[in-house]
Image (tube, rainbow, N blue to C red; front, side, top):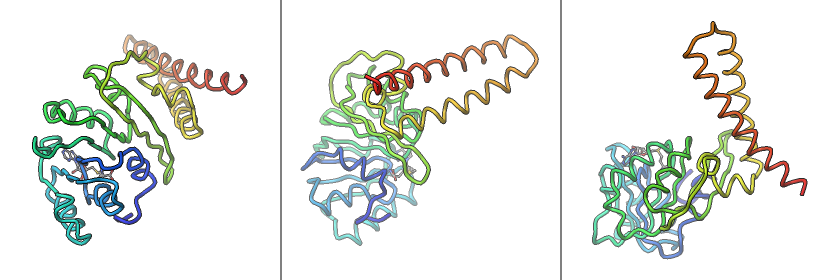
Amino acid sequence: MNVNKLSKRLQAVASHIGQDAVLADIGSDHAYLPAHLAITSRIRRGIAGEVAKGPYDSAVETIRESGLEGKVEARLADGLHAIRKEDGVDTVSIAGMGGPLIASILENGKSQLKSVRRLVLQPNIHAGAIRSWAVANGWLITDEDILEEDGKIYEVLVLERGTAIYDDLQLRFGPFLSKAQPPAFRKKWEHEAASLQKILQQIQEAAPSAERHVKEAELMRSLDQIMEVLGNGAENDRQ
Ligand code: SAM
């Protein structure tokens, strides 16, 4: 991967950044995403926010090598504190971290989001944490993607301002993904069901205890949800 050729995962994130956006990419590492979007004239300006010195230095280097000084700026800052009022940032991307970490970055920097109209988020795991944060903070899920790259499955969530009520299944599986159920979605949840089933079997071999009982009930509920959602998808296919 480099500024000219993004990974499939970052291409999916890039596809949701609007033309002429002013983008803050938080946890930008090499700044490949904002640099690529600046080179291809998709964004007006970009900020590459990084909390760690090594990745920040890499971002500075990418920007310098690509001649993007003045268009993309690297900033060493924790989360959304990379954004300044005068930037006029309208889009924030956060990619390549766990859902709970992305949700905590959003929660800790909420006051920096005043001018922001779109969040493009790519959690590696536990996307549900982001959906729950969205509902609690006046953001609506406007689109979702799922893709497989190098044997891993990634989700992309697009949020815009608004309110919505999602049920437990929509929060866990995604309102768009659970409806469309593309092959990567079914693969992810079939795989998850198989590993939960294995854990359940191991637990059931252990001596009975209150703790075992609670864990068993939790796993069965989780498995039931997966079966329900995948079953709905199969039902949709038959109609
Ligand atoms: N966004 C790039 C991508 O998707 O390929 C890089 C992902 S890399 C796995 C995660 C990056 O997020 C690391 O460089 C890490 O230093 C940075 N990071 C983690 N927590 C952060 C925070 N609170 N604020 C800014 N950057 C953070």
